Amino acid sequence: MQYREKTPKTWSGLCIAVYVAGIAYMGVGTIPDEFGLWLGLSALFLLLLLPCLAVPLSKVIYNRIRIEAGTLRVGRERIPLAAVDPVSVQTAAQSAVPTVPQQYAASLTDHAHARLVGGGWGVPMGMDSVVIRTRQGEQLRIATRDRAAFLTALTQATVPTW
Image (cartoon, rainbow, N blue to C red):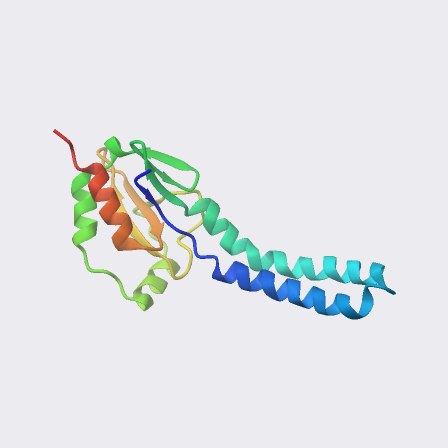
């Protein structure tokens, strides 16, 4: 495997830790006598936890990036590296890195000229995105957490070996 983008797990870990701490705190005073009540409250608070974990889970499913064995995998899509235009990758690598406010603004706007790769509805707020082209001229938008590392790995993977 040449490149795998790491997924931050801070938010998920924090949400699960708060849930477990809250359930344990409630359980200390109620488990021997009111096990059914504790179990019911655990299930009720689990319904509050699930929406908090939905966004990180969707980011893992739709925005996971891997470059391996001649294939660029983004979410559920697979793009052969031979189909990626190396010039567009080098152009994207040499372009200016957007600031955090620019990343938020870009994730809020609709980019109709480039197809979002991975299967999601849009670029998650706060994530950076890179636009590259295929050799057929199709523009692809890829949401990434680490723009520089992704473009460096993609540049190395698309350089022709003679």
